[in-house]
Image 1 (cartoon, rainbow, N blue to C red):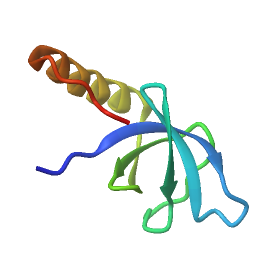
Image 2 (image 1 turned 180 degrees about the horizontal axis):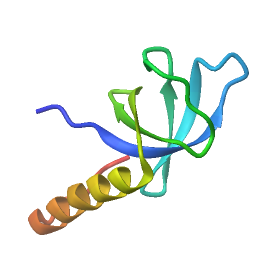
Image 3 (image 1 turned 90 degrees about the horizontal axis):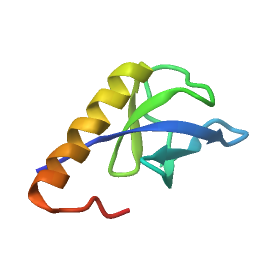
Length: 81
């Protein structure tokens, strides 16, 4: 199963091809090269296997992450960073 996680973009490289996202307190490097739209620091993106694949609105990102975290908590599993 493949899973994407929403995260807040907290840093963008000078050439705008990479960034750092915060996903539930864990910071990850991501590629911005396949995003179909421009993003800015503070935007939320869906991250899949190290690539930001779409821009999300903040409410949608928070609801999605909360649902994923609730599911993991219900099974006694942790999301490993």
